[in-house]
Image (cartoon, rainbow, N blue to C red; front, side, top):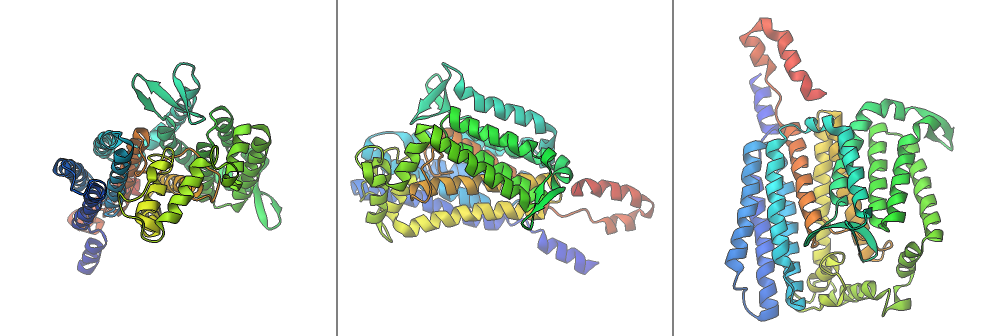
Length: 464
């Protein structure tokens, strides 16, 4: 028994010391990049480096202390990775500020502050991720309402051809960033209850068990919603994200490849129809196929980004030595082009590796989670990051047509940054619950042999 107890103590280490060490490395990346920008552009360290570095350190330490207190068994890698991405993003936005004479970096730091506050608040208010299952349908209705808001005259705003923003006084907000998180909760709650029915096979076609016709309702509904977003809001990225998210979660819940076949057919069929009917979809595809055909107009953004990648080469021109301001909206949609130009392919691969770590740690939390709802929520949030990064970086590098999504934690954008910090808090809560050691029933039984039945009841909620 002593050996088993020692083994359990080894497996369920808290690892907060490792997290703190990694956070120090993340701060070195963020603050060091900020100082390098000043040296590269002005030839001297920025005068506000101490204030900036102190505030960034305070935010990161506050997040770490909150995790240490309220989620001590949470994954030790997630927070340092997103801190490094956020710090690097702030430095690159500051570099673009110096070129364009704007003040977006200070605004982004403000949004990061709000994101960390909500990160801490989420960990405190949500002691158990399974509480979210109570809001399955409420989350779905709220998500639909948020997606409809940009279509309301006087409230919604069209930016860069996509109507995905709402304006509240001097502030603008992208409700789809919150909707993606709510949809994960809705899908997870729905699939936990109905996955047995959805897993039933229908007709077998070419070694693939297709679902029954009467079970196609949910995926058809999501197909209609994604097409509606594409048509009404002209947002190719969100349309792909929401439909792909539901398809991934449906496959994970049912383990039926037939759903992937049906989903792929619906997606490519809808995309083909949209291409033939809507001019903005045709324009995106034409730019993707040959951006140099109209390099001074519609293809200008992508062409300049490709030139920047080529000029940066393997190790980049150096922070402050490139011309990333030549790319329109480089601080948001095309921030990876700025990284590729000034830090090179090496930094781009490092950024992709960091995103890969976020997805891997989220999937690890899903694998070890003790309940089906937690598994699906963690899987869904991992899919959100994976799909969004693929869609954004694929568009910037001309792998797929361009979309309007932001690069998580790197790009300028308050709604995206705040929502992603809350997503990380939920993932840490799931991880904490999964890694937390179970009660030692043997010791309790030895203390009170007549209480064995009660002890079984106490442990059962951990496995539901």
